[in-house]
Image (cartoon, rainbow, N blue to C red; front, side, top):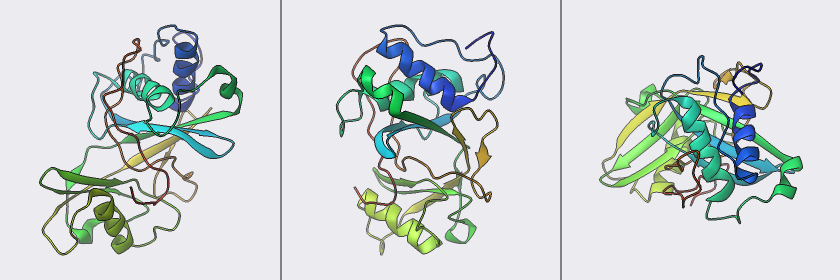
Length: 216
């Protein structure tokens, strides 16, 4: 995409997937914000409105967001264990979205807001994550309960809490929308793992992300 008008991170994710399907390396990301700084992200794919793949990271795995998007776009398209690898004839009906995460910060339950902040709950090696602004998740109690259930953490036990912000991008949207704003579009997925290095076609080291608020 270098040298062309930037149409946003979700459009770049789509361009990466098109390149991977053609067995090419992904295009270079624009050399400008937000692509040129490290950031964690989710790449979500839908086909006819239904989830087709989602892979993400909670902390940056690459040196910049451009490479992070390419990495997770590959994982979402080809290494989500719930779906077969994406085929070329699915591309026309595919839509992409990218959620760019702010750095997680320690907080208490009183510091959460389900529309504005995503939540991470952790106890020992168990960790559950929920993105913000999910349909049907309209209270802190509901948000935290879902994250705890996903992680298999006893809600009566001790656990740590972090929050994070999300800027959500759909295709042909270079500005994105900060979650908590009135027009923030619904996300494609809620729980993240590592993706796959761009420019290569190895097996993914990551885990898939679930759509909506269904417990894993």
